[in-house]
Image 1 (tube, one colour):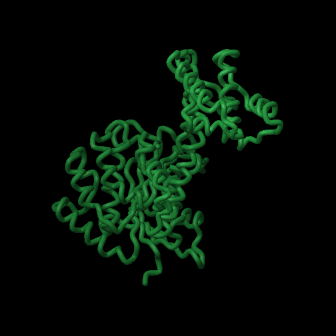
Image 2 (cartoon, rainbow, N blue to C red; image 1 turned 90 degrees about the vertical axis):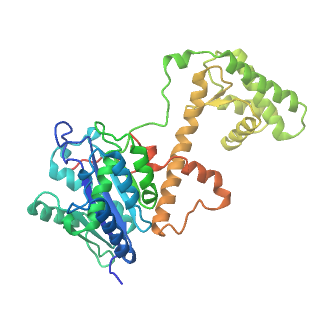
Amino acid sequence: MSEFDRYVFIDESGNDGMLVEGDGTSSHYVLAGIVVAPGDLQGVRQHFYRVKGERFPQAKEMKSEFIGNNNERRRVVLLDLVHPNYSLYLLVVDKLRLESKGFQYPKSFVKCLVDRLISEVLRDAPNACVRCDDIKNADFMAEFKRYIFRQHPVGLLDSWDFDFVHSGSEICVQAADVIAGSVARCWERARQSPMSDEFMHILEGHIDKGVFATFPRPKGSYVHEMTMEESGNYSEAVERRALDEAYRFIDRHGASEDRERKAQVEFAKALLEYNYLQSRSSWLSTEDLRQRYRDRFGEDLGDQKLRGIIGSLRDAGLLITSRSAGGYKLPTCEADLYEFLNNYNSKIAPMVVRIRKARETIKRATDTQLDILAKQEFENLRRAVNATPEWKMHKGVKFLDEEESIE
């Protein structure tokens, strides 16, 4: 039995350092790691050798540069490289968004980014044997090995290994080269392939079993910033529908003796009254709703129960918007609807991301044997998580930590 629980083969695409203009430069730097279990290594190697013999018969190695701009040939090679017994760990670096000064030094650039990919691998396979294509010269590779073992010391429990290997002697590194170069052509600003989505779809099964990450972490927001037009654009159609739904609910349930239904009716009346008495841009505060509840029922109302009453009204079809700063109203314009969506998107979207991360981590830890969303009760949640693949969700950006300073 092998002393290692995984074998990992890493290659890169793109120039190191911050140069992005001129011959031989790139806007992105891509690292691809092919990760294989010991029992599958021989079969995966044999598969890659067959691909090389069929698709690169005259070349000493498989290389992405030998495919160049021939998108159809690249598609065919990627299809041939597909094999059920390996996973992919990908790191896509947008060099135009790097800010730390250390990245301008090629050695620091390579050390930091290769270490990031290795860190992801060791998190899932602490006893991995990692082999990386030769980088620069012998002195740098010796320096890099010292650096990487300082970052991840070998211990009694985690007896991992790292070294460089010439790609000509390792077919799995050659396959990583082709994959890294193909992924780069899905992201490069100046030479993005028109078949980029198809390339990523071909690799998607391998990515699902591994990791897809971008760096630096995107600073995007879950909040839509309203334009002046959206903020001031009154919509009679939106307001009329909101009023009609509130009146319809009160007419249907106004005579109910049920305590919860009475509370819902009181809130619907409060929202209607506020719509008529206040300006369209103002919001009914939660304290106003609590006071109305106290006046009607003689007791205090907690946050959870208050939200439950609002939720029940929404379930009944009422259009009630809310905002992160607090308050409720019947919508009167487009901006009110975006306030509502911003409030929920800032909560729901990160939750879906966390569930996605937990699911991926457990699947990797169990060799995809355990999918925590496989139960029938989680079908809708599973659909939400599966709706957009990780790589597509961030096309143009994973969940690594924020960019760090490097020496």
